[in-house]
Length: 180
Image (cartoon, rainbow, N blue to C red):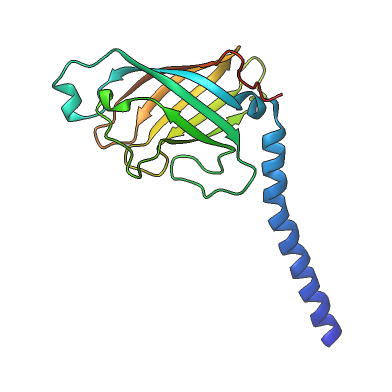
């Protein structure tokens, strides 16, 4: 009887080990993907405001756009998922003055960004990029786009109660690491 119990425990332990390892293997495969490697490095970012982000912003003239910099590195270690993006494969920072759009300063004083790039396997479709500026905060901005040569082009939305959003483009900085 004790032998059967030992075998059952070993089977459970083996199952748990395989299940826990599959997350790490999945992350490694995701980071090895060409789309994920393309996201590594420094980017010039421009955001255009099409819909106001805050009530205060609607009462004053807004700039048509803001520009700055974003940088991404691979996130090899398990990072907690955020409501806006589960299992990000990249983390980084940005330097963009979002206050001109009515987005208040970061809740924690940091300008963090998380991202995930995904290869589209459907014929003719471009690889996708999902980016969250200020993840897990009331000031989060969600950027969804596709790779277009050495750029990422798409739309962004605000997680604020008022909503808001617009278009964006990321252009790889000249001389920046291409993740290859």
